[in-house]
Image (cartoon, rainbow, N blue to C red; front, top):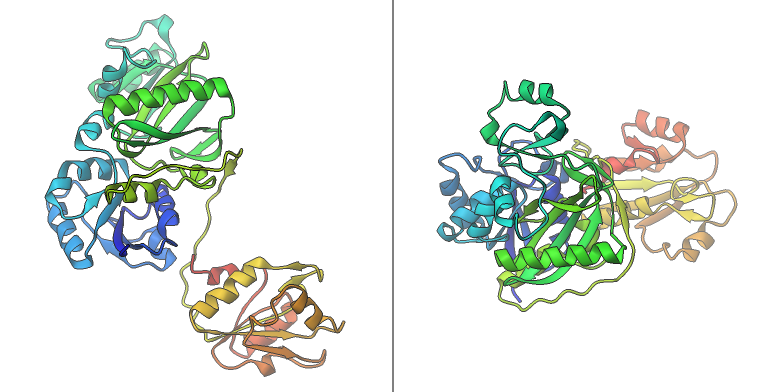
Length: 429
């Protein structure tokens, strides 16, 4: 199979991170990146980011077509709801194929009021208020008719809060519905022409900006039967094809109610990928005309994540010097695997890696051989305790060492120096 060019747009979202991580090591796909923001997380990963107008800009289609032609883009994977919606509207106008659901599906699920109306007699949907709720019906929950996740969504506890809020906002732009106080669930799905091929239900234990940062697969068989049933109904009714998800939440009586349906990759689909379901790969192969099937490891997995920093810097070097004791090897029994990653990053870039050590116990070779890493260095320099490492370092070099004294001497000699706590700024991703 030939290699295909895949554009991730916009490339600066959490959803984009999952798309990138799903495809970046697949030999059949070459990734390209685009954003409407000049500075994105993706540019910090050392990627070339192509600037596109916002999807609402009149010149968007023209500029997108130019990028598709210039980079020979085969597929576009949208990483934001607005982008997924717009691309579904114009897919027939551009040369690249869009990974996502059809225009007909997007026209429904992008709008919560339309979604609830369509499924109100098919799925359990929370009560939607057509008029101002009675005092006894509070609290209520309001959310934009057009929106995603929990953005601009609020709990209104009483009539006073209700009147105050809608004195500033147009009620016609919002859905007013019963407040659902229970647990929330996301069900990631994959379908083929309306037939459900896979569902993976997970809870949303903790969220940030609408993205699950702590999530666990549901192991309750009764719940999963409900989720599978509702997934099949949605998939069949909307003729889903490819990757999508939906969300539900318990009401005050512990009954499930529909929150939303998403026609794209969810921000935490990585939990499914962890057990073997790569939605983006599946969706592209499906677009290529392959009959895809889903297999996965039936294991219990939980996920927790935090903000992970990626650095841009002006450190340029040809030679990397690494100390051994308490830097590469901790307590003579643990190898610093992050340093191993950096060593092989250097090898991929054609840089020199030198192990430099004052090891006094005479077990340097033994430990290197024990862990099978004696051959990964371009040079191994074993010096005496009275020697100074800076005297063995070439120009344009970096030293990684746990010793402040060694770092200070190398720094005074004009080298970049890092401890075991901050050398990760040298990682490219």
